[in-house]
Length: 246
Image 1 (tube, rainbow, N blue to C red):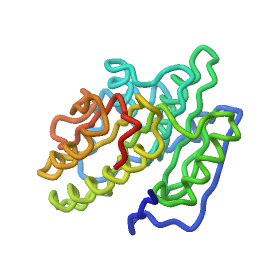
Image 2 (cartoon, rainbow, N blue to C red):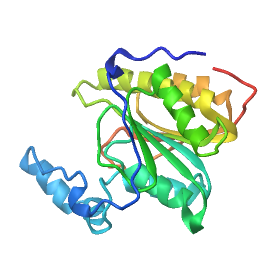
Image 3 (cartoon, rainbow, N blue to C red):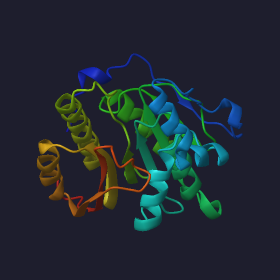
Image 4 (cartoon, rainbow, N blue to C red):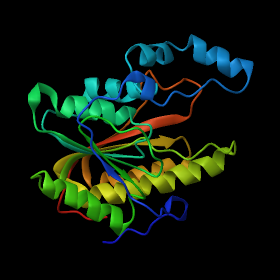
């Protein structure tokens, strides 16, 4: 089934990149502290902000995936992983590290509308994952690396830029998550895994109910690295049933 691209995620170019050398920390995306004094103080006192700088990760969200994977074991050596909404690349850092652990031949493909510094061992596609063009590029990468046309894990930490209107932000992220789920149903192997982000709201329950038919287990997760005052949570879907289609 061809996915209908979201209007917001239309792109005009696709770029593939793979690097053999690690990018030094000075090339990582490093967002300067902006906004109110309360925001600045929160950032300065945030232990995850401090850790991500010390450990050379690109942003603090990396610790959400690290915690989820430590608890639920979704990233395995040799896995083929697609990271949707990957910029600035912190989740791809973790995925690549764990998929290629012990010199295993893992593969990570990162997709985002925004350009971001390349990562060692990660293929980057700049474009809209709902388009046939991007999906064909993914298939090309899989084929060139001797992989099957199905993948083990689909990750999606993507979220719209906050508007400040809760219902609007909720509606947009639900649409984005639904597109990620449709993509995953097309791309996952039998028993594959999907992990995506949502915001609290009435449509989150409806989305989960639609997805549950395609997986053995679907559960909400709120990792410690998610701020307590944030409405975000993650949905972990394990045991994809290949015979079902969305």
